[in-house]
Image (cartoon, rainbow, N blue to C red; front, side, top):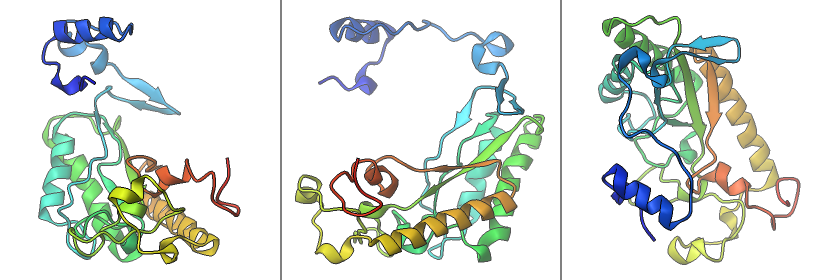
Length: 236
């Protein structure tokens, strides 16, 4: 199987498309400046977003161990603004509570850190101003997550999984101690409330939207395959 990121030229990519019988038109060169489609605004709901460049939610895992942003995080977010991208999609994934962190230095959204997140969002705004950009057409969101099976909230070398069901294939590589690590329905109801609380805090902090993470095998992703789980959170 060919990994697309190993294809270094447009010709290599074109040959790969022929090999897999796929039709994906693409431009050999990017159009510069204002004539580029990427530089054109678009409408997201009722808001006009200034261009089509986006910062995707890839966490830096360099916050404080209590979940607060620090100077490293603030510097990165300021650079999001400096980049000129108008859609800041999540900035980075933020856990809704301590046990949902994928790393002991992941951000956590809590009431006591609300002012920190207000300031963190402001770093984007100030970076954008510093770059000479209009801030009225920015769209800034926050990605919320619980890392579930791959949670490492206290030690980056120690996995502390919380799961929806026993997975016979995944557990060959990532063993589970026992069924006590499976979320009960009541625990999941509490977790849903935690997501709602985090979303409300994000709104109070000035973010335009939240994104709930459903990928990479984390808890949201696992919900999509919990077809054999009993109860209201399982089934097809």
